[in-house]
Amino acid sequence: MVKKGFVKTLEAGIAIALILVSMVFLFPGETETEPQISDTGYNCLRYLDYEGVLRNYAANSLESDLISDLRKCVPPILNYTARICTSTSCNTELPTDKTIFLSSYLIAGEAQIDRTLINLWVWSK
Image (cartoon, rainbow, N blue to C red; front, top):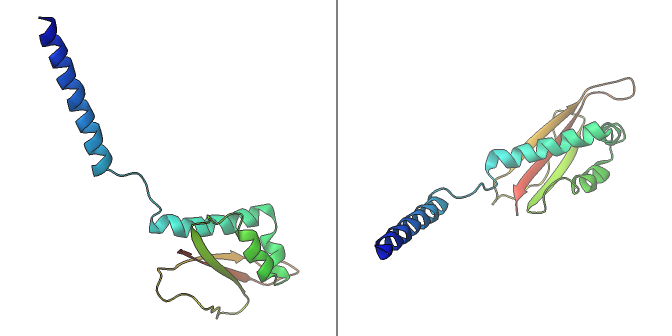
């Protein structure tokens, strides 16, 4: 009688283990998806704006400072480049073999600066 209960409990434990292992393979964890990459770029620009440094970079055309400051926010698994655009054309050289995501952030004009568009291109390494 004791052996029957033990065997049933063991069978139930094995069944639960198989179900859990199956769920892990059928429903893998979250990976960095395309919308998340684009959101990461925009959130980094927004963070710099909330810190108050993005407007300074835009007003003084400090593109290299912007790029180095973004390294604090952009995850190391991603490559990026940024441009401060004062005209409608804002081109940069980008890799042709990657899927690239563009995040744009507009700094509205004030007394000292005009409207300035900041573009951040992000791609996987």
